[in-house]
Image (tube, rainbow, N blue to C red; front, top):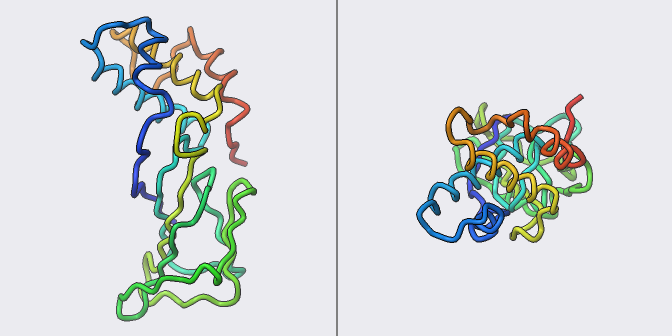
Length: 190
C-alpha cells in the first residue's frame, strides 16, 4: 500500500499572529521564518502522533482488494472518503459509487468495507486509488488545544535557539512538556 499527499492543508493549526503573540514579536522581519517554523512544528506533531491535524487529502493506492473487502486506511483521523477509483483492464478509471462501500471512521485505524464484490483492478500494480480526507477539521479551532500548544512550544524553542537546533528534533529541555501534550493523541503501533 502506497500513500501520498494530494492536497495539503489550506492553513496551519496555529496562525502566524498566534505564534508571534506567543513569541512576543511585534515586527514583521521574521514572519517568513516563523511561518516556516509553524509548518515544521505541525509536521513534527503529525509525525509524533501519527495523525493529521488540519484537513488534507491523501491518496491510498492498493494493488487489489483484500479477500474480506476490508481496507484499513493508514491516515487519520479520517473525515471522509472523497473518491474511490478502480482502473479497468484498459487502464480507464471507474469511479466506485458511494453505495458500493461503507466507511468506519470511528475505528483507529479507520476502515473501509467494500459491500459486495467490487470491480477487479485491470492493472497489476496500484489498480485502486482511494482519496481520503484526514484531519481534525478545516480550521485551527478544530485541532485539540494541547496539540496547538505543542506546536507553539516547538516554534518558540526553535526560534529562540537557532544554532544547533535541528528541525524535527524535540530538544531535551522541552521534551517533557511536548510529550505530555501529545501523548493522549498518539496512535500507537502494535
